[in-house]
Length: 362
Image 1 (cartoon, helix red, strand yellow):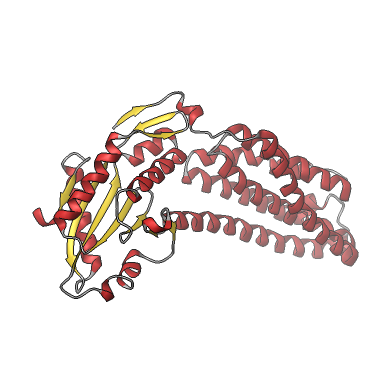
Image 2: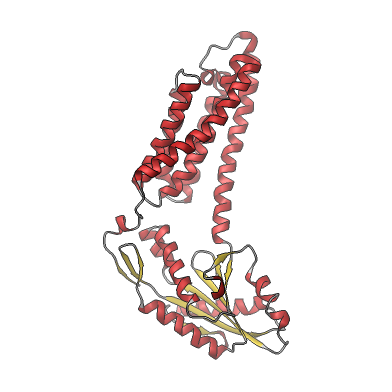
């Protein structure tokens, strides 16, 4: 792998308007805060000062939304992430001041956790979960301490102490559930990103689809092919993709994979189908194609990617791909053909990468 780049630390961040980032964050922060404060007002009418116990709900809505937005912005441009943080903080503070006034120390303390979450996001999944867990347990500790009186910003009367304690214990579990939901949202996002994507040149790109390749090709292709008709499967993997992600970031690695998929689409027929599996692997289904013909297609793809540098902003990367090919018949299970192609690709990795391997010759 030959890396040619200029200022990679800057090239990996697309240009984003700082003013636009702040404005969007400000309005989104207001949209998040106002409904929560409206709920507090309703509770205030019902039980008086106990309305202050609902403040953590507003805070967690703000923090969860801001955390998600900043996590995405962190992979784009640090200044934009800072603008988003300030935008949320300003919006929430203004809404709080206009709605209730009073001390904001606890809420600013929670907002102060956002840079920690931002920094940990760059550290990878372990840091992300650690930051979310730390914020969760810190909030729970504050909730349980003194029956949550610290959150009420008022002296709990003896007759109301049990009610306050009950409300804050309930809110503590709501906060825990909120952070669990954040974790599940991140997990679903990862699963969605890694889910197979199916396309053909007619679609103009590799489009997201929840169906697996085996289901997608068996219905429109294999069922209408005669049992003795052959097809081929190509498994393609971008070489050194993990190293690119580690050196330049996941954003750059994703752009490399997308440009590779565009080049693949330009080298196959309209009747062929492409599926993306994970971050660096592609499956190509070639109906009515024997192994030798599939090898010609694979070499055309491999040569095109190897000879043309992939550009992301000012960053220029020369990457390669390794391909494995397997041939099968319409009457056979396509999953077996995919497994054979994967074994052929693995042998290509063992042989030094940047090559095409035929399962029939192993």
